[in-house]
Length: 149
Image 1 (cartoon, rainbow, N blue to C red):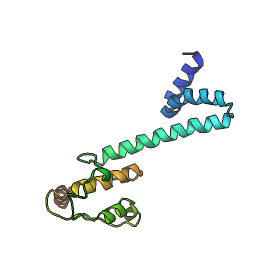
Image 2 (cartoon, one colour):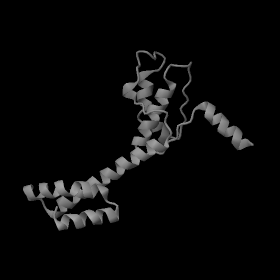
Image 3 (spheres, rainbow, N blue to C red):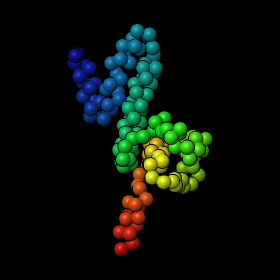
Image 4 (cartoon, one colour):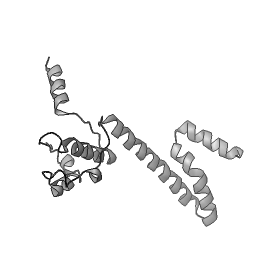
């Protein structure tokens, strides 16, 4: 490693620019090979930083949400859960109900996939940068009872 790279690495650490630290070397080499302008190089490095921060934020949002496990709609078996209307679930996956401040209630007997669907929709929301909290109905009732006391 050369001294300048070490100084840049130290500056990135001080400024908390972990994406720049990761992206810098490869972006610099590519810019030199393609004779890219400095502004193109800078844009590439800053875009890498932004991507890193967004990924970290999505990870943190999904961790804070309190999901029992990470589930996705791709993993949901619509053939088994015949009562779950695929088209309506796919529409919910667009998350427009959140923008309209609407509630979604999933009702059904035990073992039909309500938790899987709720977790999947919540996970989609976290990946879209929306703060989410997973709470079962039983836990919500306990929280409301404690709050009322």
